[in-house]
Structures are given as C-alpha cells and as structure tokens.
Image (cartoon, rainbow, N blue to C red; front, side, top):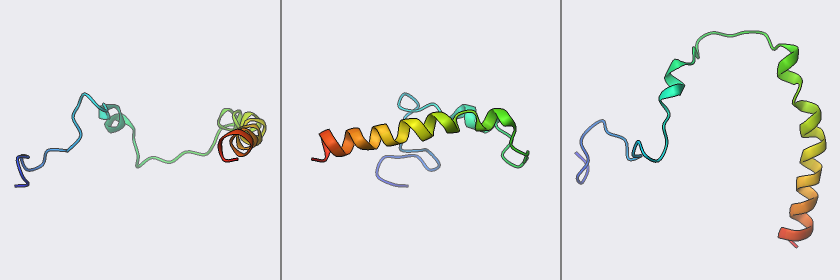
Length: 61
C-alpha cells in the first residue's frame, strides 16, 4: 500500500476526469476508414499553418 492509497485505486479522482466511456469502445475491432473520417483533413491543412504562424509570431518571438 502506498502512503494512504488503497491498492488498485487510481491517483486521479473521479471529479477530475471521467474515463468510463472509454470502456464502451470495442478496441479489439478494426475497420477500414470511411470517407467521413477524412473530412477533417482539409481543415487541418489550413488550420495548422495558421496556428504555427500565430505561435511563431506572437508567442515564441
């Protein structure tokens, strides 16, 4: 037992992060990507350089 913690308990309280929804995802199943999965790529292609420019110019001068 570690200083005041019961065995098997996490050091994260349930008030901080609720990760119970992760147990419902079937992690063992695989599927091929659908076209909807790639819909966000054009947004990332435009958004990422803008964010990098903003950080380089104003944050990391």
